[in-house]
Amino acid sequence: MDDDVVLAAPLFAAIDTEAAHALLGSMKRVPLPRGRAIFGEGEPGDRLYVIGSGKVKLGRRSIDGRENLLAVLGPAEMFGELSLFDPGPRTATASAVSDAVLYELGHADLIAWLEEHPAVAKHLLEALARRLRRTNEALADLVFSDVPGRVAKALLDLSRRFGEPIEDGLRVAHDLTQEELAQLVGASRETVNKALADFAGRGWVRREGRAIVLLDVARLERRAR
Image 1 (cartoon, rainbow, N blue to C red):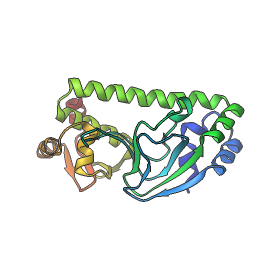
Image 2 (image 1 turned 45 degrees about the vertical axis):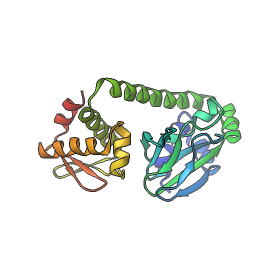
Image 3 (image 1 turned 90 degrees about the vertical axis):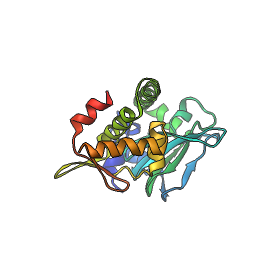
C-alpha cells in the first residue's frame, strides 16, 4: 500500500501524522477487480471510501436503462462521503473501472473521528463542494457546449488527474470503454468517436485503446471553451 497516496485524501487533512496513520490503520482494505460494484444506486449509504490505487466510476441509470457517468475518480480521491452529511440511499452506483484497492470507513467510526477532530469536517465539505461545482459545470456544458467541446473538456480533466508526460505529449490511461467515455460526456458513442477521429485527424490526439495521448493541449483547451 502506498500510504502517501491515501493520506493525501481530504479525510486526513488538518490532523497530525500520528493521528492520520491511526485512522488509516482502522480502515478496512477492500480489493476491487475491474467491473465489480462496491455499492449500487438506492442502497443504504453508511460507508466512506478512499481510493488507494486504480480508478472508480460513479454513474446513474435511467428508468429506460440508459447510463450516465457522473465522474471517474482515482488515487487519493474519496466517494461515499455524502452519506455522512445526508444519510439515505446512495445517489449513484460506484464500480471499478480498473483493478482498484479501496479503504473503507464506516459511518459510526467516521462520526466518532470527526467529534475528536472537528477540523476534518471542513475539508470533507470542501471536497463535496468541489464535486458539486463539477456537477454544475457538467450540467452547463450539456446545455451550452457541443459534443466535440465536451469531449475536449473531458480529455483535459482526465489528463489533469491521470496524465503522464511522454516524449511527444501527455498520455492519459483513462481505462474507459468507448461507451463509458460517451456516457461521461453525455453523448452517443458514435458522436464521441467522430469527435475523437476529428481530433486525431487534426493532430491533436492519438488514440491507444483505453488510453489517449494529448499531442496539442493548447488546441484542445481552445476547443473546450
